[in-house]
Structure formats: C-alpha cells, structure tokens
Image 1 (cartoon, helix red, strand yellow):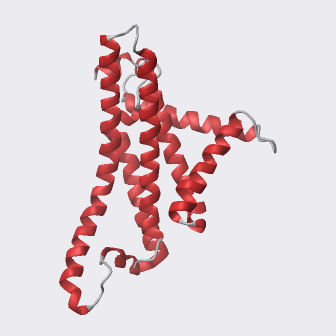
Image 2 (tube, rainbow, N blue to C red; image 1 turned 90 degrees about the vertical axis):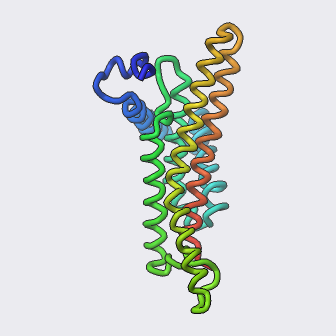
Image 3 (cartoon, one colour; image 1 turned 180 degrees about the vertical axis):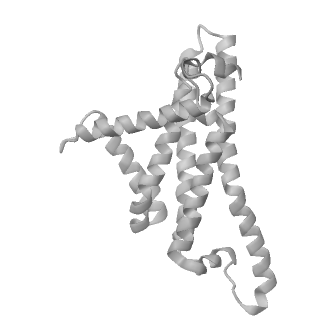
Length: 228
C-alpha cells in the first residue's frame, strides 16, 4: 500500500488501484506507439520502425513459426506479441521513478494468464472439435488401457488448471522480488548501485516478458497440434 501513495498516477487519480492505472498506461503507450509507427511506415525502415520490425520478426519466426508451425504461428503471433509487449512495458514501467510495475500485482498477472488459458483451450476445441479430448488421454487409447487413460486424463486436467496459476505467480513473484531487491540495494548503497540496479531490473523485465510469451506459445502449440 505504501507504493501506491508515492506513485504519480496514484496521486493524480485517487480512488483507482495503482496497478489498474499502470496497466491502463501500458496499454495507452502501446496503442500510441502503434499509431505513430503506422503513420511513419517506410519501405526502408529506420529508427523506431526498424526496432519494432525486428521485434515482430522475433515473435513471428521464433515464438510463432518455430514453436507452433508455419500456419498457426502466423495466426497466433499477433496475440503472443501483444502479450509479450504488454508485459514488457509493464515490467519496464517500474524502473521509472514515480511509477510502478503493474505486473508486480497478482491481479494483473492472473488476468493475463487466464486469457491465455481460455484462448488456447478455445482454439483447441475449435480446431479439433471433441477429439481435442485425445490430448488428455495419453498415447494409448484402447479398451484395456481405460484405467491408464483415466489416470492420465486426471493428471492432464490438473496440469492444465495449474498452468494459469503458475504463469501468474511466476511473473508476479519475480517482479515483486525485483522491486524489493532494487529498493534494498538502493537504500544500502545509493551512490554506487543505481546503474547496476537499472541494468538488473531491465534484464529481469525482459527475461520475464520473454518467458511468459514463450510459455504462451508452447501452450498454444500443444493445443493446435494433432494428438498422438
């Protein structure tokens, strides 16, 4: 609660949770950046366009086509890229004095994780129909293997339910620990550590955004592929 009192947005817009305000701000930043980039598109990219094209290419080829496949990778990479960039902006916002990382609140990370869970489950059933259940039954689907199939089904259901929990808690825990570590180090050695702290915070923010996007791509890949 003390963090909420010192943030700029918390002071400007009282009554709304700080994590909500910073989540909205991250979305506004991404929308404005997209509109600016759209107005300045050029056949010879440079500057900001060059950076964003490299980022888009990374999401398309590494997290899209290489993990999900050529067709579905192209379909889902805007979704994966939007989540990755949103989390990255939220993470980086905590490095700016007077602001906070929205992803350091479990409500934000859980909401994104639930969206990922619902999307890949929806497309699993949309693409495969009722046969999507085969993903939960294991490789042997014979009458004599019914007990094993029931056990695998139970384990798979539990593992899928746990996925949004682990996604949200992992990101939340890492961002909270990052902010605590940065605060402690800054209090201990304020004259020497700031640059190191910013470098560490930036690295953690990038890695956590990448891990979340990577796991999202893996979950989608598992739902759209044929069950074996």
